[in-house]
Length: 254
Image 1 (tube, rainbow, N blue to C red):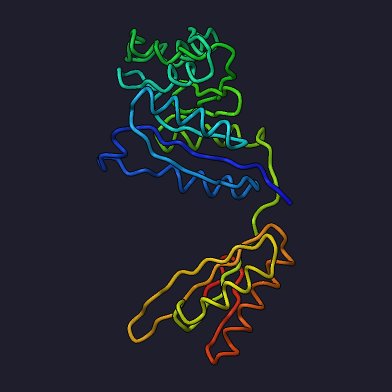
Image 2 (spheres, rainbow, N blue to C red):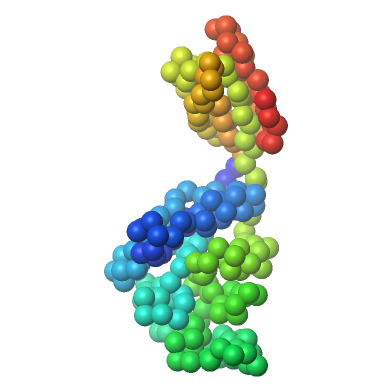
């Protein structure tokens, strides 16, 4: 089985400086996973024209879907639109529908629809608009690149309106095997389980409590039966060396 692949590109100096904490990668990763879209890569890059163009072109060639966040606002450093247009050899135009949405949004408000805000109606020629139900300024789609605002609440609202139009796949099955033993001791067991179950990945996450330590082993795969068999094999292997192990479904706690 194979699912669509995806990448996320977060654009913004404010993220790299630490002034703003990214909240979009984790949220988008969960949403994509729920639709059977495999997130393969996420990058945070600066507001640098050449870097945006190069990164978007690379991601677009490598993955089925690309999602960008940030850089489509009204200020001088909001250069994402122009960069993506250049990446795909398109002109930037004043989009009639985008402009109409913004005019309607600002009508009968105390906020001036000035030249800076009008810039948010500039869209790469031929792009498809992504609705923005919160602040009207739309995102857009060029080929397989989906361009969102950087503000988490706006990005989430934009994605919710778009998600039913995205290609989907089989949601990943993830089972956790809680082991009362260190990961170094069960490394060979984990490797054997992964090698003998095609399409399954095994990851380990050590945990520590007062007087206790252990390993949460996450077994993931697209085939639910194969994944369950792999998790059970791992638990049996851990028990065989004298340690407690429990297979847990998503949301279940020890």
